[in-house]
Image 1 (cartoon, rainbow, N blue to C red):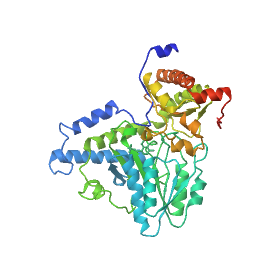
Image 2 (image 1 turned 30 degrees about the vertical axis):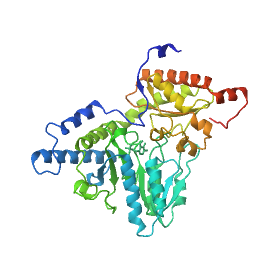
Image 3 (image 1 turned 120 degrees about the vertical axis):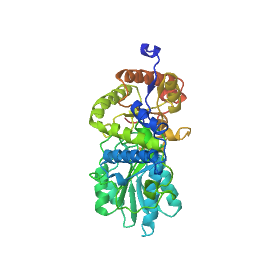
Image 4 (image 1 turned 60 degrees about the vertical axis):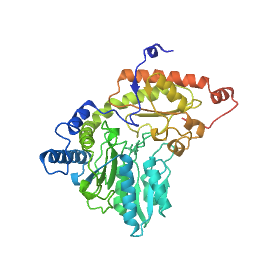
Length: 406
Ligand code: PLP
């Protein structure tokens, strides 16, 4: 075994699944759970008013990070809720005008795909655009798919598995020109890619706190001013009456601080993290029958998704776990399923190649030493896993072949 691996370390390389709350964010949220911040924001006395003001301050921070107005931001319970609300909200509103067609991509997160499937059961028609071998859409595909009865285009900003970044401003321009509402699931993009909803002509945008060092259980939906939209939860006047329920005060405040921090220095982070990610990709592509999944350039700074034919993804994860490396194979949300992920299949990969996938998602918290360790650990585990794999043996002896290209 490589000498470096004799000294086991813990390396978190699964930031697309979730992130650790940063110390600063944690300290920011604490007083709002106890001390002088536990009041109900709807209460009229100072303890409550203080919480209410802090929520509005967080709303402004989220709005500033997106180039939106505070009254266009609605706090939700998670990214999935934001996606559901955006898509079902527009669909149900515009169905009354005879618009029952939705355009999306084949490799969206299940929060979008399953929402679209639910709408199909209600009689909506959904076009699932193919993403091509590199996991990228051509804006022309969207233009060609728009019909007179199209209610909504919903295309993710960046893919959660392979990290590819879609041409969102171009798609936004097409939708605006054609008079179709445009939603983007930006759960993986916020804090990683500069976003300005006005310049990029985005009408609705979903985000989630736990992907940017805020806690789990808080998200937000940007709804462009003027879009008429059904309420998500009827009840009290919280979130301007559109999503009732006493606010998750501490988490909302944490999200405000986290998004402010995450979006403050994106170009600097990209300059730091991209070379580290490239180092991982280049080193692991030295392994035989390995490939990078998704476009090399148009991808999130921290995402390295590779396939190692003959090395089962599950076995890779367990082997890496034993070495202290947290990674993922396919989407974290579908872990437990034996089917290869729909994202990898949407690239046209055969099952054998898709099954050998490994997603490593580093962040600006990752160090060069972590990168060294990740590379050595993955190389060791791939080799070990292949040595036990009947498929790998058959490939070596020529008994079997699989369609494989770099
Ligand atoms: N959309 C994308 C692209 C995601 O990656 C995720 C989570 O992995 C979600 C939506 C769902 O977000 P949440 O976990 O906050 O519901």
